[in-house]
Amino acid sequence: MKNKFKYGEASLIDFTKAINEYGWIVYENALDETFVDEINEDLIRAYEVRRQVQVKNGISINMEGTLHHLIDSEGFGLKFLGQMFCDQEMKQFLKGNYVVNAFGGVMNAKGNTPYVQNIHRDIRSFMGDVKLMVQMMVLLDDFTEENGATYMLTGSHKVDEKPDPEAFYAKADRAVAKKGSIILFDSNLWHAAGTNTTDKLRRVLTLSFTRPFLKQQLDYPRSLGYDFGESLSEELRQVLGYKSRVPANLQEYYQPVHKRMYQPDQG
Ligand SMILES: [Fe+2]
Image 1: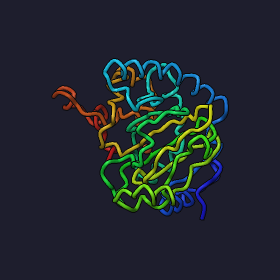
Image 2: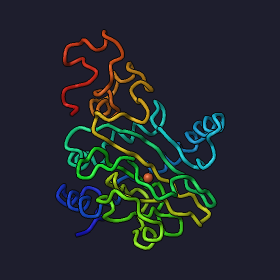
Image 3: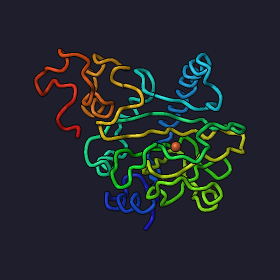
Protein backbone atom coordinates (compact mmCIF):
# COMPACT_ATOMS: atom_id res chain seq x y z
CA MET A 1 0.00 0.00 0.00
CA LYS A 2 1.20 3.50 -0.77
CA ASN A 3 -0.29 6.94 -1.23
CA LYS A 4 2.23 8.69 -3.49
CA PHE A 5 2.10 8.32 -7.27
CA LYS A 6 3.10 10.12 -10.44
CA TYR A 7 0.09 11.92 -11.87
CA GLY A 8 -1.62 9.68 -14.42
CA GLU A 9 0.11 6.50 -13.23
CA ALA A 10 -2.24 5.42 -10.44
CA SER A 11 -5.37 3.46 -11.26
CA LEU A 12 -8.75 4.29 -9.79
CA ILE A 13 -8.34 1.19 -7.63
CA ASP A 14 -5.03 2.56 -6.26
CA PHE A 15 -6.81 5.84 -5.56
CA THR A 16 -9.75 4.24 -3.78
CA LYS A 17 -7.53 2.03 -1.63
CA ALA A 18 -5.27 4.92 -0.62
CA ILE A 19 -7.98 7.44 0.17
CA ASN A 20 -10.01 4.88 2.11
CA GLU A 21 -7.06 3.63 4.11
CA TYR A 22 -4.95 6.77 4.64
CA GLY A 23 -7.48 9.51 3.91
CA TRP A 24 -5.07 11.23 1.49
CA ILE A 25 -3.10 10.67 -1.69
CA VAL A 26 -0.28 12.57 -3.45
CA TYR A 27 0.01 12.91 -7.24
CA GLU A 28 3.40 14.24 -8.31
CA ASN A 29 4.09 16.12 -11.55
CA ALA A 30 0.48 17.08 -12.14
CA LEU A 31 1.12 20.70 -13.21
CA ASP A 32 4.02 21.76 -15.38
CA GLU A 33 6.41 24.44 -14.17
CA THR A 34 5.19 27.12 -16.58
CA PHE A 35 1.62 26.85 -15.34
CA VAL A 36 2.75 26.92 -11.69
CA ASP A 37 4.75 30.10 -12.41
CA GLU A 38 1.74 31.67 -14.14
CA ILE A 39 -0.43 30.93 -11.09
CA ASN A 40 2.16 32.30 -8.66
CA GLU A 41 2.40 35.49 -10.68
CA ASP A 42 -1.37 35.99 -10.74
CA LEU A 43 -1.67 35.34 -6.99
CA ILE A 44 0.10 38.64 -6.33
CA ARG A 45 -2.66 40.57 -8.14
CA ALA A 46 -5.39 38.42 -6.63
CA TYR A 47 -4.05 38.91 -3.10
CA GLU A 48 -4.08 42.71 -3.38
CA VAL A 49 -7.72 42.68 -4.46
CA ARG A 50 -8.79 40.38 -1.61
CA ARG A 51 -6.63 41.96 1.07
CA GLN A 52 -8.18 45.37 0.41
CA VAL A 53 -11.65 43.98 1.09
CA GLN A 54 -10.48 42.12 4.23
CA VAL A 55 -8.89 45.29 5.62
CA LYS A 56 -11.81 47.55 4.64
CA ASN A 57 -14.28 45.23 6.37
CA GLY A 58 -12.14 44.89 9.51
CA ILE A 59 -11.48 41.17 9.26
CA SER A 60 -7.80 41.14 8.34
CA ILE A 61 -6.42 39.69 11.60
CA ASN A 62 -5.19 36.07 11.22
CA MET A 63 -5.91 36.26 7.50
CA GLU A 64 -2.37 37.14 6.35
CA GLY A 65 -1.49 35.33 3.15
CA THR A 66 -4.91 33.73 2.66
CA LEU A 67 -6.89 34.13 -0.54
CA HIS A 68 -10.44 33.06 -1.27
CA HIS A 69 -12.55 32.52 -4.37
CA LEU A 70 -9.86 32.62 -7.03
CA ILE A 71 -12.35 32.39 -9.87
CA ASP A 72 -12.83 35.42 -12.06
CA SER A 73 -13.00 36.04 -15.76
CA GLU A 74 -9.32 37.13 -16.08
CA GLY A 75 -7.34 35.02 -13.61
CA PHE A 76 -5.92 31.50 -13.73
CA GLY A 77 -8.90 29.92 -11.92
CA LEU A 78 -10.97 29.03 -14.97
CA LYS A 79 -7.91 27.73 -16.83
CA PHE A 80 -7.07 25.52 -13.86
CA LEU A 81 -10.59 24.14 -13.50
CA GLY A 82 -10.84 23.61 -17.26
CA GLN A 83 -7.98 21.12 -17.11
CA MET A 84 -10.14 18.81 -14.98
CA PHE A 85 -7.32 17.53 -12.78
CA CYS A 86 -8.26 14.31 -10.95
CA ASP A 87 -11.71 14.34 -12.56
CA GLN A 88 -12.15 10.57 -12.61
CA GLU A 89 -10.92 10.21 -9.04
CA MET A 90 -13.31 12.83 -7.71
CA LYS A 91 -16.23 11.36 -9.68
CA GLN A 92 -15.40 7.99 -8.20
CA PHE A 93 -15.15 9.36 -4.65
CA LEU A 94 -18.33 11.46 -4.84
CA LYS A 95 -20.19 8.87 -6.92
CA GLY A 96 -21.05 11.15 -9.82
CA ASN A 97 -21.00 14.75 -10.94
CA TYR A 98 -19.45 17.35 -8.65
CA VAL A 99 -19.01 21.12 -8.35
CA VAL A 100 -16.34 23.36 -6.87
CA ASN A 101 -17.42 24.41 -3.40
CA ALA A 102 -14.54 26.80 -2.72
CA PHE A 103 -11.33 27.75 -4.51
CA GLY A 104 -8.79 29.34 -2.20
CA GLY A 105 -5.08 29.71 -1.73
CA VAL A 106 -2.49 30.42 0.94
CA MET A 107 0.86 32.16 0.68
CA ASN A 108 2.56 31.06 3.89
CA ALA A 109 5.42 33.32 4.93
CA LYS A 110 7.77 33.27 7.91
CA GLY A 111 6.07 34.77 10.94
CA ASN A 112 2.51 34.42 9.63
CA THR A 113 0.01 32.71 11.90
CA PRO A 114 -3.11 32.34 9.78
CA TYR A 115 -6.10 30.35 11.03
CA VAL A 116 -5.17 27.40 8.80
CA GLN A 117 -2.46 26.50 11.33
CA ASN A 118 -5.12 25.35 13.80
CA ILE A 119 -5.90 21.62 13.87
CA HIS A 120 -9.06 21.37 11.80
CA ARG A 121 -10.95 19.51 9.17
CA ASP A 122 -12.40 21.28 6.15
CA ILE A 123 -16.01 20.21 6.69
CA ARG A 124 -17.78 21.10 9.94
CA SER A 125 -20.12 18.11 10.02
CA PHE A 126 -18.52 14.67 10.18
CA MET A 127 -19.73 12.67 7.18
CA GLY A 128 -18.52 9.17 8.10
CA ASP A 129 -18.82 6.93 5.06
CA VAL A 130 -21.18 9.26 3.19
CA LYS A 131 -18.84 11.16 0.90
CA LEU A 132 -20.14 14.61 0.06
CA MET A 133 -16.91 16.59 -0.16
CA VAL A 134 -13.28 16.08 -1.17
CA GLN A 135 -10.29 18.43 -0.75
CA MET A 136 -7.55 19.28 -3.21
CA MET A 137 -4.22 20.97 -2.48
CA VAL A 138 -2.12 22.18 -5.40
CA LEU A 139 1.50 22.71 -4.39
CA LEU A 140 2.96 25.90 -5.85
CA ASP A 141 6.30 25.51 -4.03
CA ASP A 142 8.11 22.42 -2.81
CA PHE A 143 6.62 21.44 0.56
CA THR A 144 9.29 20.67 3.16
CA GLU A 145 9.26 20.25 6.93
CA GLU A 146 11.15 23.55 7.23
CA ASN A 147 8.68 25.60 5.22
CA GLY A 148 5.63 24.17 6.96
CA ALA A 149 4.39 21.19 4.93
CA THR A 150 0.86 20.39 6.14
CA TYR A 151 0.45 17.98 9.06
CA MET A 152 -1.92 15.20 7.95
CA LEU A 153 -3.23 12.79 10.60
CA THR A 154 -3.33 9.66 8.48
CA GLY A 155 -6.46 7.56 9.08
CA SER A 156 -8.22 10.31 11.06
CA HIS A 157 -10.92 10.69 8.40
CA LYS A 158 -12.65 7.81 10.16
CA VAL A 159 -12.85 9.64 13.50
CA ASP A 160 -15.32 12.38 14.46
CA GLU A 161 -13.57 13.71 17.60
CA LYS A 162 -10.89 16.32 17.25
CA PRO A 163 -7.52 14.86 18.30
CA ASP A 164 -5.71 16.51 21.19
CA PRO A 165 -2.75 18.56 20.02
CA GLU A 166 -0.08 16.43 21.70
CA ALA A 167 -1.25 13.21 20.05
CA PHE A 168 -1.85 15.02 16.76
CA TYR A 169 1.66 16.46 16.44
CA ALA A 170 3.25 13.21 17.68
CA LYS A 171 1.49 11.07 15.08
CA ALA A 172 0.75 13.29 12.08
CA ASP A 173 2.57 12.76 8.79
CA ARG A 174 3.88 15.71 6.79
CA ALA A 175 2.72 16.43 3.25
CA VAL A 176 6.26 16.67 1.91
CA ALA A 177 6.08 16.80 -1.89
CA LYS A 178 7.34 18.72 -4.90
CA LYS A 179 5.94 21.86 -6.49
CA GLY A 180 3.38 20.90 -9.14
CA SER A 181 1.96 18.03 -7.06
CA ILE A 182 -1.71 17.63 -6.26
CA ILE A 183 -2.89 16.14 -2.98
CA LEU A 184 -6.44 14.86 -2.66
CA PHE A 185 -7.83 14.18 0.78
CA ASP A 186 -11.02 13.11 2.48
CA SER A 187 -12.69 16.21 3.95
CA ASN A 188 -13.06 14.36 7.26
CA LEU A 189 -9.27 14.24 7.72
CA TRP A 190 -7.78 16.24 10.62
CA HIS A 191 -4.89 18.42 9.46
CA ALA A 192 -3.03 21.67 10.15
CA ALA A 193 -0.69 23.90 8.19
CA GLY A 194 2.86 23.93 9.53
CA THR A 195 5.02 26.91 10.39
CA ASN A 196 7.27 28.35 7.73
CA THR A 197 10.72 28.95 9.20
CA THR A 198 12.37 29.77 5.87
CA ASP A 199 12.67 33.13 4.12
CA LYS A 200 10.70 31.99 1.09
CA LEU A 201 6.95 31.69 0.59
CA ARG A 202 5.19 28.32 0.68
CA ARG A 203 2.27 28.75 -1.68
CA VAL A 204 -0.64 26.39 -2.23
CA LEU A 205 -4.11 26.33 -3.76
CA THR A 206 -6.78 24.81 -1.56
CA LEU A 207 -9.96 23.68 -3.25
CA SER A 208 -12.98 21.73 -2.14
CA PHE A 209 -15.39 19.88 -4.37
CA THR A 210 -18.81 18.56 -3.40
CA ARG A 211 -21.81 16.79 -4.78
CA PRO A 212 -23.83 19.43 -6.66
CA PHE A 213 -26.67 19.75 -4.13
CA LEU A 214 -24.49 21.33 -1.44
CA LYS A 215 -24.32 25.12 -1.27
CA GLN A 216 -21.13 26.63 -2.64
CA GLN A 217 -19.19 29.04 -0.42
CA LEU A 218 -19.64 31.68 -3.10
CA ASP A 219 -22.31 31.51 -5.78
CA TYR A 220 -19.85 31.21 -8.68
CA PRO A 221 -22.46 31.20 -11.49
CA ARG A 222 -24.04 34.40 -10.17
CA SER A 223 -20.63 35.92 -9.46
CA LEU A 224 -19.43 35.28 -13.03
CA GLY A 225 -22.85 35.96 -14.52
CA TYR A 226 -25.38 33.61 -16.12
CA ASP A 227 -24.62 35.09 -19.57
CA PHE A 228 -20.90 34.49 -19.10
CA GLY A 229 -21.72 30.82 -18.50
CA GLU A 230 -23.13 30.50 -22.02
CA SER A 231 -19.62 30.84 -23.43
CA LEU A 232 -18.10 28.09 -21.27
CA SER A 233 -17.47 24.42 -22.03
CA GLU A 234 -19.88 21.82 -20.62
CA GLU A 235 -17.14 20.69 -18.21
CA LEU A 236 -16.68 24.18 -16.82
CA ARG A 237 -20.43 24.76 -16.59
CA GLN A 238 -20.64 21.56 -14.57
CA VAL A 239 -17.80 22.24 -12.15
CA LEU A 240 -18.71 25.91 -11.60
CA GLY A 241 -22.27 24.98 -10.67
CA TYR A 242 -24.20 26.27 -13.70
CA LYS A 243 -26.06 22.95 -13.84
CA SER A 244 -27.13 23.07 -10.20
CA ARG A 245 -28.36 26.63 -9.72
CA VAL A 246 -31.33 27.71 -7.60
CA PRO A 247 -34.05 29.48 -9.59
CA ALA A 248 -35.05 32.83 -8.10
CA ASN A 249 -38.54 33.23 -9.60
CA LEU A 250 -41.29 31.35 -11.39
CA GLN A 251 -40.01 32.34 -14.81
CA GLU A 252 -36.67 30.72 -14.04
CA TYR A 253 -38.35 27.72 -12.40
CA TYR A 254 -40.91 26.76 -15.06
CA GLN A 255 -38.68 25.69 -17.94
CA PRO A 256 -38.35 22.63 -20.16
CA VAL A 257 -35.86 20.07 -18.78
CA HIS A 258 -32.89 21.08 -20.96
CA LYS A 259 -33.13 24.69 -19.74
CA ARG A 260 -33.70 23.96 -16.06
CA MET A 261 -31.39 25.64 -13.59
CA TYR A 262 -31.06 22.37 -11.69
CA GLN A 263 -30.37 19.58 -14.14
CA PRO A 264 -31.56 16.00 -13.58
CA ASP A 265 -28.05 14.45 -13.44
CA GLN A 266 -26.91 16.49 -10.43
CA GLY A 267 -27.89 14.08 -7.66
FE1 LIG B 1 -7.77 22.83 5.78
